[in-house]
Length: 305
Ligand code: GLU
Image (cartoon, rainbow, N blue to C red; front, side, top):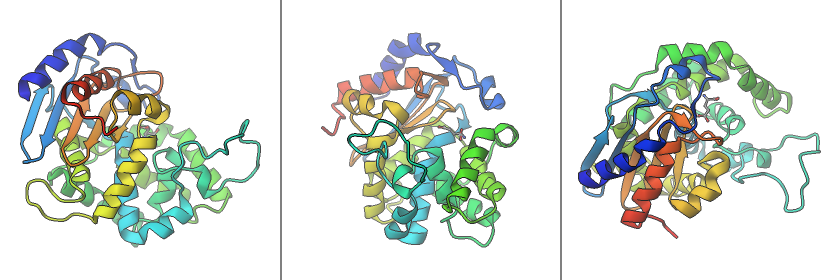
């Protein structure tokens, strides 16, 4: 497997400067487009890594499935569904555009910013500090890495410049979808996006989702298998932004990308994959990361279809 990963990285190295590193969060613009690493954790918890697999980067949207997971664990499916839907577009089959003036749960999705921001309010905790600490604890548990921390520079950079997320969060508030103080909710969301991981951490987190909620190394149950089913289904339809359909055809497994350049892919019952290459395509997905996953999926017949 290590040889295969090395081969794939070599073949996809030429793509690593296609696209651009995210710069709307100023601190993310400092990423080095030469970095390219990959890690696979498989059935027997065996770990295979290649390239810059020890390089750390921030999770960004890859934390969204964990926000969803904790909301499901804390409040249950019914409560989550009453606030945030699961459809990719939220539009009826004959819609031209969003012309209505209402914002409803079925319009938002846990893998887009509004959905993830709203779900932060469902995490249990007296304060937003406590909610975030519980989210970080769950992330550490899934990665089996007690050392995961927030990248303060990225967190402060996004907090200082996150006008669009502020606008989205105030819109949620205006439509009665969140009740709490907008700045506190956003602070939790910004810190969540800034959790610093490596490809290995992502592969381990993905493996727990592939393993129906069981830690691959200890066999401890971290969450109920019904939550893994829910999250993997949402990842399959909406995890790769507006490139999810293309990804479903070319790779065919649940996955989540983030603007930090990471991709976490879940191969149900088989493996968890973590990739890092910070240059993004026009949809916001790691350019070389997708190419590498396409190749890996072909070589190992990973598609679930
Ligand atoms: N923190 C980023 C934002 O809210 C996450 C975006 C992403 O990775 O998709 O803009």
